[in-house]
Every structure is written in C-alpha cells, then in structure tokens.
Image 1 (cartoon, rainbow, N blue to C red):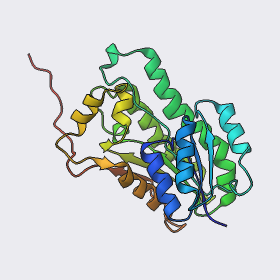
Image 2: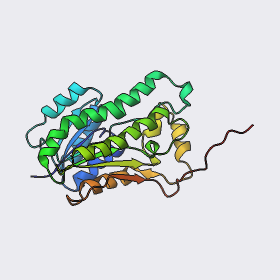
Image 3: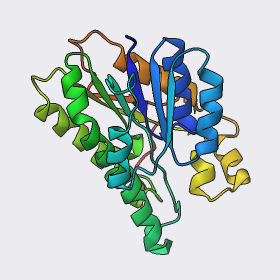
Amino acid sequence: MSNIVFITGATSGFGRAAARRFAAAGWSLVLTGRRLERLQALQDELGGQVPVHVAALDVRDAEAVRQAVAALPEGFRQVRALINNAGLALAPQAAQQVELADWHTMIDTNVTGLVNVTHALLPTLIASGAGASIVNLGSVAGQWPYPGSHVYGATKAFVQQFSYNLRCDLLGTGVRVTDIAPGMAETEFTLVRTRGDQAASERLYSGTTPLTAEDIAEQIFYVASLPAHININRLEVMPTRQAWQPFAVDRD
C-alpha cells in the first residue's frame, strides 16, 4: 500500500507543486481546493502515475471538511501526511485603509480553515502512527513584520504557534508537525493579494530571484519523508537575494 498525502489548496502554487512532487515519489494523492476544473486537470495529469482522488472543498466550511474526510474512498482513507497549504493574503495597503471583510477572509481561510482540516484528520493521522506528518504552510510574515502585513502576518503567526502547541499534544503518538515558512516566492500569491494586478506582481519579482513553488514543494516533501524519529519543528526558507532591513524610523 502506498503512502497517502492530503493536500489543501492544490489548485495552484505550493499545493499544486507538492502534488507533483509527491506523485513523482509514488504517493497516492487526495487533492482539494475550490476550483474543481483545476483539480480535475491535475488528476488527468498525475492519474497515470499514482492514484488520485479530488474533491472541491472550501476549508472555511467545517461541515464540508468533515464530510469530505468521511467520504474518502477506500484506498484513500489511511492518510499519512496532511499538507495544510490553503491560504491567502489580501489588502496590502495599510491597516487603516483596508476593508474589514478582507481581514475576516484571511482569518477564516488561514486560521479557521487550517484548524478545520487538522481537526478532521487528526484521528486518521494518529492511527497511522510513527512517521505520519502534518505540514502547515506558514510564512516569514508570521515572524517578521512589514507594512501591509497586518492580519495576514498575524494569521501566519498563529500557524507557527499552533504548530508548536500541536507538537506538544501529539507527543507520544508518532505524528510529526512542521511549520514551513517561505519568504518571497513567485506564485499566484501577489495576483490574489492585489486582485489580479499583473503589473504589481511583475514589479515585486522583477530584477531578483525569488523562490519557486517547486522549491517549497521540495521542502514539504523532505520533511514528510524523513525517518520517523526526526521532526523539523519550523523551516524558514528565503531566497538568497532576500534579507531584512533596518528598523523604520519616523523623522520630522
């Protein structure tokens, strides 16, 4: 029986790249996301390599998450690794300029969605035992503040602390928990954040060398495939060409 990985937000970016990486290693895939046509395209692409089950899913809906997990077909139920990738950033303006609804959307997706899926799959992962993995996609924004990060950064700080606390509770079960915190990575992230502003996305990545979705997928696969006695608690990954700046100072 092959290993089974459950990936949220598999329709693009890190999630889609992770699906391809795990498929290349022979893992069976449970792929979820809100855009069914993209899931089906990925199923068509990878289904010749490994078994693939897809389910349209909004992780913000706890009952829908519960039903999706309960409805997993035979052959996809013994999930060995959970990749909590679904998430987004909105409203890159200053906090005082953004809509409250955008804050709620980030909290509902990045926090509530993550705990919905984790809670639904914890019994399965614990039953899987030593070597099972939960990989939560955080961000350097959860550790390092910057203008316009406001609620997005706060949600990723939650991901870090939730991952650490989950590790404490799962001690003795064999289930591992990792917070992977990427820095600048060229995906659909900025397009989503700016509501489709292609020029803004191009400006952000122009003239430098950001991470790729495949770079992060490789790290996700690495931590999930380590020997069962090894747990990477947190893995912060930045491009070589990205670093920190001095503190901002307001001057007269």
